[in-house]
Length: 201
Image 1 (tube, rainbow, N blue to C red):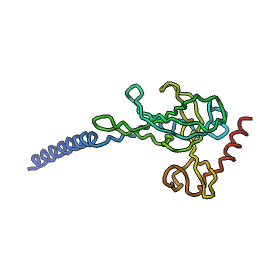
Image 2 (image 1 turned 90 degrees about the vertical axis):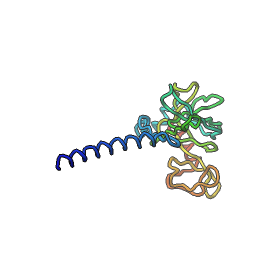
Image 3 (image 1 turned 180 degrees about the vertical axis):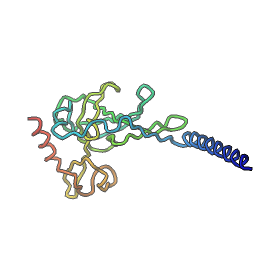
Image 4 (image 1 turned 30 degrees about the horizontal axis):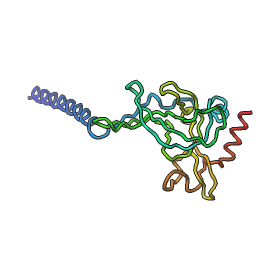
């Protein structure tokens, strides 16, 4: 009797393992397959403003006019943002500035794929940004932020002035890009410019 019980238990365990594998495989092909890519997260050690200012090839202020996703060698999905320049604080940017960030969405496949990279900066269409950029080679004539610290968001504060912030998670968003009120990480845009220029001297 005990041998039969052990045998049944073994068969039951094997069936559970097979069922679990089948569910995992089936789940990965339904709807948009969500992939978390850890390889490109925490791209650089935490950089100070001074180190970023000195190390960046370009420091610009601009507005994102659009984004598209692109596969790199068929293995890595990135987002390419087109940025319309408003001001250049360092370097000589191209007429059309393209900025590459890790992760993206490919909705053209039979099963859409979305890749999320923890800590990677994100640039949204219509968002005004300050960027510390270095040249990258994966997308022709494009640049990349210096890790998660290389992208700042710019938006209006409650008095109508512009503020710069790295962390948008605590900031209420109005309809469209921008802040509806101040944020403990936000500084006036004029102070941000002055700080960058002081490190360029």
